[in-house]
Image 1 (spheres, rainbow, N blue to C red):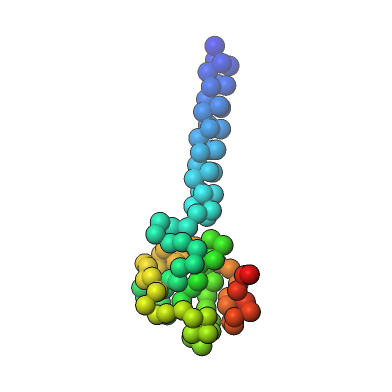
Image 2: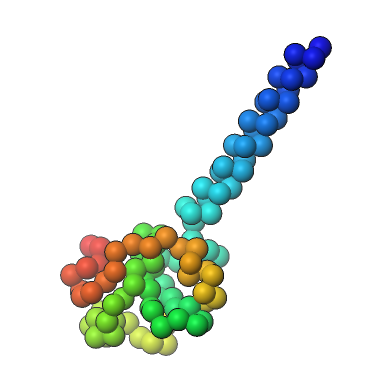
Length: 101
């Protein structure tokens, strides 16, 4: 009987570890609520503007590039800084040729 209960305990432990692992992995696989690919975002206390592309943030390095890409300051979503930190970072955008085609 003790072996059987031990097996159940091990099985429950494995399931619990699996659920926790999936939870933490999924936190990095999905964008925070309200942010989508194609969005321009900026932290409430930061100057950097990012383009969300392929579920990652890409820092637009120069305002001239921002303008060349046809973006509008009015389209920037201001989000809490901790939300910016949660989004994986990809390569920065220094000019129009850096966009994914």
